[in-house]
Length: 217
Ligand code: B16
Ligand code: MG
Image (cartoon, rainbow, N blue to C red; front, side, top):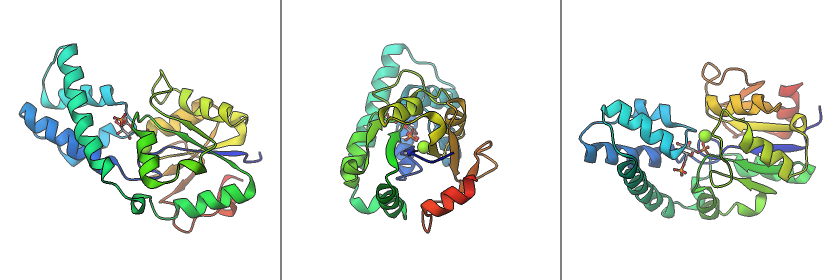
C-alpha cells in the first residue's frame, strides 16, 4: 500500500532525550534514598511520566501517597526541563532532517506521535516544528501506548487511513501501538526488542524513502 504519511515517535527516534530522563529520574531516586541504574531506565522508554514514576518506586520498594507522587513527578519534570532547555539544534539524531526533507519533497505527510508532554518544547529547541503537518503528544491523548490512540489521531490529523501510514518507534509498546492501529511499523533499534515491526533500522543515517518503500514491500 502507498505510503502517505510517516508518524514519528520523539524520544529515541528524532532525539535522544532518554539520557536526560535518566539523569532526572536518577536524581529523584537519590533523593528518595535508592539507586536507579541505566538498565532500570530501559523500562521507562516510551512510558508516560506517572507510569514511569510507579516503576521507579517499585524498583526502590517505596510507596507514596497520590499527593507525594504528583510532587515527585513535578520535581523530576523540572530537572528534566532544565536539561532540555539547554539543548541545541545539533541534538537532532543523524539523518533525521534529510529523511524529513525527502518526505516533504515526495508529498508524504509528517506527524509526531509522542507520549511526552514536553514534545513542543523539544521540537522548538531542535527548530523542526515546521516540518510537522500534525503534532500529537502527551497533552492530546488519554490512553498510553500500546493503545493506538496517539497514532490514530496523528493519521486522522493529516487525513490518511491507518494502512497508508508508517510509524517509526524505538519502544516495544510503540511498535505494538502502531500494529494495534492497523499501521505498519519501522523499529528503530534492536529487532529482538521491537518484535512485530515490518522493518528495522539502526537510525536514519543514510536512510531514504526508497529504502523504506523497498523494506516494506
Ligand atoms: P514527559 P516518546 C516518552 O517519549 C519517553 O520515551 C518516556 O521516557 C517519557 O516518560 C515520556 O515520553 C513522557 O515524557 O515526562 O516529557 O511527558 O518516546 O513517546 O517520544
Ligand atoms: Mg520513544
